[in-house]
Length: 261
Length: 273
Image (cartoon, rainbow over all chains, first blue to last red; front, side, top):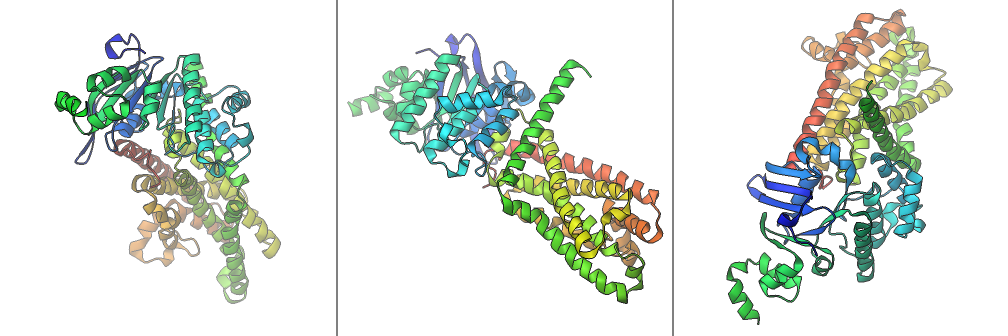
């Protein structure tokens, strides 16, 4: 496991003092963090904590009210098109066109990313993700698990150096979810890519992540490796840590520890 | 052209081509969509064809130029289909909740605009072209009798359609699918004052300046000049071109303005809801 922030010699992501407000609601409040290259990090927090807003700002889909967002040293607010070819994104909540076949979808996105040998790349990903049988089927006709594999194939079309994943294993059965995690880990290990995921699955976070960023009400309230967080909160697993942080028990940490032991 | 600019242009054209391909795939896989392109222009043309047959015996005005009403409805459909082509292709992205995926690729907003306009041209050619062929078969009238000016009329009308299509798409992007009806109906507000079937002089005096602020009005007046007087009125054509430059610039500006607005408001990921 890698450390975070100060030990990160070369950042894939650098976020400094970022805030976003929607009318009276502060979605993200003065958030700062760094993610090192080749690491896997998680954005955690309850519903409405600011995870998706943060991901959207990292992708350039949403403009922050203030603060700095750099991906590979490039300012995402001013110069996102320089870095977009090097990153990709997958979310079960953002669809691909359902009436197009899987092969058509992948071809369109490969062209959008400027992939050189489109057919070869689709063939390679179809083999790797075991979606060869699905290529002629429409995306809309696939099961949730099959769609997840296809959206991951789409997210890997440009061999991204940074992969942002919003709940990558949501609504998957345990077997498929485990397979997806293993594939993402092998991709990271093979390519040195950086992964940042938003997840509610604490097993996934413990297994995959070097760094955990805990959000509550738009603020970054804690961070560390899963091991550091387990020790700090005196808990056995990340689910308990998550609940402690979500319910703001940290300030009563010692008491909470005593109460639980 | 510098090497960097050439590479950039090649990348842009590739991305525009990718989006056009996405919508051609959609058309290829959905015959109802193709049928819809041809259906309404043909129905309208047939209706006005029979009205023409009736008026040829009862109206000396129509009798002077038998194709005036069929030409008018076909050219009106160029405008309507041009606008609808932009709006519906944009709506397809919203219906499929695909904008979030698109804009995390290197796709620029102006490349989306270029793809929308290209698809609008393709859809208009299929729809109006099909209806024009039916007019030849059923009414023995070819809109090609307008000659070369037809090209100028077509270009001006589709450009005005693009401008309005971009504006309605921008509103749908900003206000969501609740504003979808704008895409289908907005242009019909302009039909009565575009002098499609009658000269602009028919309109009340106070309405005529408004009518003349529309590029389409000059095109339809020009069309009648060709059919009745066999002259191409360059003054009308230049008016239409000048107005279209303004309309298209405003259409693009409005689209880009609202694109930035939805990025500020965080609607790209949730668009379609």
